[in-house]
Structures are given as structure tokens and as C-alpha cells.
Image 1 (spheres, rainbow, N blue to C red):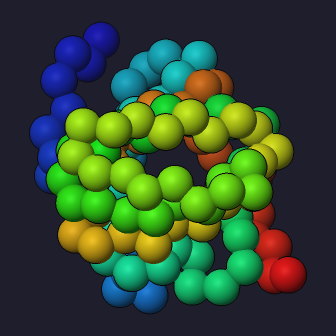
Image 2 (cartoon, rainbow, N blue to C red; image 1 turned 180 degrees about the horizontal axis):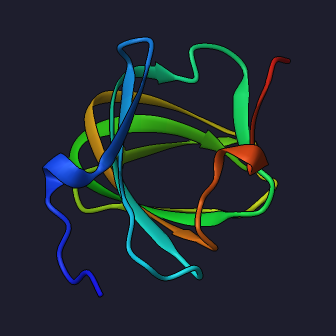
Length: 116
């Protein structure tokens, strides 16, 4: 069993130079953990939605405006945001670093983008 994952072992994805996500893959299936770095609007237009995953975002650094549930929330270091499954969202971050806990394990097949 793997008890430690180094940052260099995390799976990193990047989108348009605005968002970078480091996913730490532990062997359990009921949750996943990652770190998202955002500087700008993510997604660049429209909204994103996760159809099977609910998430908690902890603001480790920076600040942002987050649109979720039809409202804009201003967040800063130390704040947390809850994202229910099937809820549209966007993030406009400034040097933002989010610790992202998802349940169940996040996978790209359930993630989609909506232009409105």
C-alpha cells in the first residue's frame, strides 16, 4: 500500500495557462484529493459541471470570485466552498490555490462544459 505521494508523482493537467490541477491518486475509491492553481477565469467562458462528484474547496492561497448556485461568492485564504454534484460553476481567481476534496473519486467522464 502506498502511504505517501510526492508532488512529482501527482498527475498534472493544465488548461490554457489559466488552470493547473495536481491530482494525488490514493488507492481508495470513495474520495479523491488534489490541488488546483488558478490565475484568471476558469473556465474561460460558460460553466463547468460535475454530474457525479460533490466537492469541497479549501482556499490555501490567493482570492477569487466563484459563481455557484446563481450567486457570486468572494473567497480568500482560509475560506471553504461546497460544490454539490450537478451544480454549474465558474471561478475567477487571482493567484488562487485550492485544495480540492471530491467524493466519489473525480473522473473526466462525469465532468462537462456548458456554454450559455
